Length: 328
Ligand code: PBG
Image (tube, rainbow, N blue to C red; front, side, top):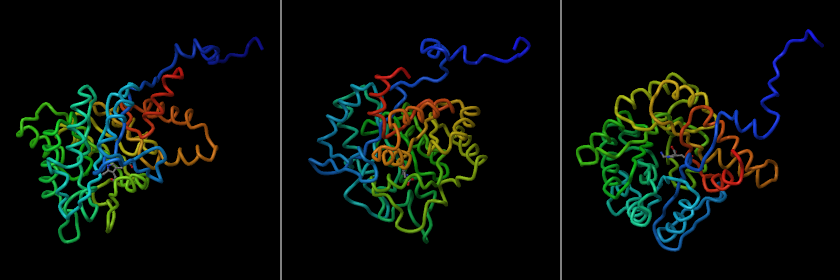
């Protein structure tokens, strides 16, 4: 035994105290951003079958929801609108009296400190369910930019703190930046969903937001999951165009991409733990097959270890509670 030379890694694992001292990645409720689906009407709290625990809520439920979010130490929410009226050009998206604009005003009146991020896209608002306008059966890039810019300006006017465009049109950051600046909102940051894959993991969201494309798919604007270099190209152009944050979406199957953008891009990186990732955990938990709390916190640790600074997640409220209970 005397000559045997080896490293004693276990020295640093022997007690909770030492393990805490050498922990490289920590979680806090301030890492989290909570997504909300807002619907028109009153007294509505519609459950979403494929996302247990997530609801579409009407404006009268916002206050209690926000009180909970704030009391848990979650600094931000992201709003997705589910309008009553859809048309070819998604006009409710840029209506100053649209559902998201109304929700934004209400939250900012009651909770001025809470950071309201607003999703800027057309797919929930268009009758065809695509993220831009259609010409000859295709999503037409440049006319879509005009409408997305109008949407962002209307959202900023309603009091949004951060604009988060998720449409994947080319030039959307540049167009929205210019539109915001010209309208007097040069201080409003853009959180770009610049690295967004055409993913099967968005299925449950489309139930929640009623945004399933009515024909075709999103592969002409969202990225092929097979591609890594393309993600870097997208990320770099977003930086040139003035993005202040960069979202990588989905998160779990794309941790390699999170790490790579973290190494090359010097803005905060947001991991979007999307609806399909949430649904898988919930389904397994409901069957008693997994320890939900441990699994969710481990997933979040892996996202932060990969380089994410912020985690956008439907688990946010539960996770914030769990983080307070546990030493993470
Ligand atoms: C809209 C949008 C989508 C998601 C966020 N914004 C869906 C899509 O691209 O079809 C998905 C989020 C999730 O799955 O949680 N462009």
